[in-house]
Length: 178
Image (tube, rainbow, N blue to C red; front, side, top):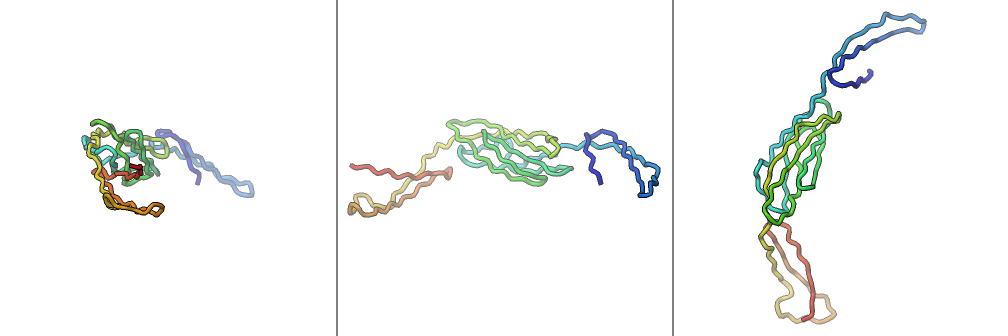
């Protein structure tokens, strides 16, 4: 079966001819075929909702569904310079990092879907609010105990924990002579 590629709305005349080894030929047969346009994908974003607030440095999960009538489709979500993509059709869930901001900031989450023929769905643009992380991390040293004595040249066990409301506390050790 030959595969025919042409733009939607195009009318084609398909002609078939047949012959045998003896040189006999059948009368050719023709058919007119009008190609329907390939519709763009249908994109639905179910989460997050417009106006949702996120803390700086956390993750937003972009979820939704894309329908396509003719093969695969690429869904791309973009927020603050970071992007993630998925191949569909079907449901998608794309985690994106929320940018770190110093003051409350409005950002636009953009979600697009493009099928294999290059047809693009109507893009979704969702206004979000990003709040700065103003909570200081907590820190606790478990070992060594305050004022403890230790023999020089021997390993020193250092134990501490750090936590942060945003879940991204970083613990670093520094040693100084007093």
